[in-house]
Length: 498
Image 1 (cartoon, one colour):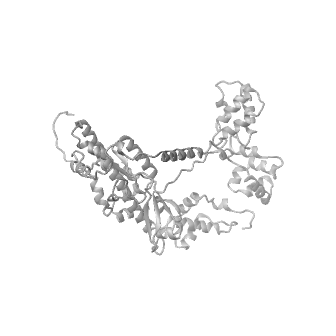
Image 2 (cartoon, helix red, strand yellow):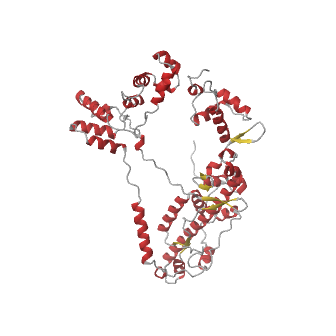
Image 3 (cartoon, helix red, strand yellow):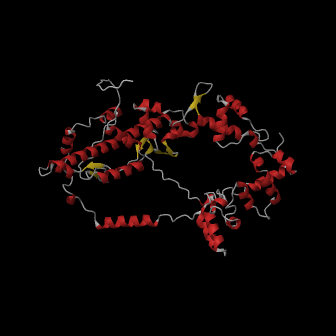
């Protein structure tokens, strides 16, 4: 192999995204709550950014008329503006900024101060917000520790019981063996104490807590006075899998119980709780703030409005713009101000770009899914992101970023924008049908079937075909499982004559 040094010329074509375009795409992808946090972060880092207060009449504070809005007519042109040469000095931008109205306060001291009543109102609102914060929810461990503290047991057993409680999972199960909870090479006596401590934990409420598997959990919940107590112990101990698979004739053969007796005991079994600790889980329900609202005009047309009331309107500080022209300012200070002005203008343009793009994409989606909004989810039309991209005149990745984690308030409730995109197939008439419509028809067929002879997946394929829907058997099986519908054997009612 020969090694040598030399110069070589190559022609390479590659696409490079300017920082301004990258920032625009990042801002577009943010939901409204994340956008507020982003703005707050940028304001902390950039002293030239200010919040432009808006008066009740809609005119920004300190201005004679509303700020001129960006022209949303051509999104493609707006996107081109973001591909800039980052090496140029942006002199035109600075001249435009310096020529703005000088009606903003010249210094921080000249800005209107907040009155004492306004400050007191803010303090009262913060106090009320703190007072309305929900108290800490009692956990399963808290609940068990409280009961344990009321028992008069030896310190060694108490320590082992507390160790067991701290090892329970969120459903109340002990998924770790007792041996693993003890030090290595523990004596048989200590292991016996651990079993005794486990029995103490299993005697606490809720019933079934501390079980090591489902069978033990259900057995711990049985009480002698419970109906079908003996039958339930037999079914849980020996035939739990057969019950899950609805193999009632096999259970009848092995136990001698009648089908009716097995079904009655099974109904009682369903009253037991397979996850006793789940009731103490803290359900986290995230707050959803709609990015868009759907409004109906007088002529019945749907229009999309961006919910940016909580997003502050930004402006560049007039104080720093004047400071840039001050002859006493040093070169380093002017360079700093120029850099921050550039960053601030990029951010403001990106926010406006986000608003225009999101509104246009959402409006195109709403126009396509008019029947979904008007009549209900069963009337959703097949829709792909590429269709919206072609209609709006942007790249499909722009549509993907625009709808990501965005929500819209409609007369039918709040929906994620992604909900309006649906795949589908073609029926025998050549019309497109969404998978949602197929799932609804599948559910309708199964709900109306004879439970003595439930339809197999092959029969479901035939019945769907009779409705004009050509669906493969594997697709029917996939959607049936996804919808939580058991197999035909598990759906069969053995008490009925087939």
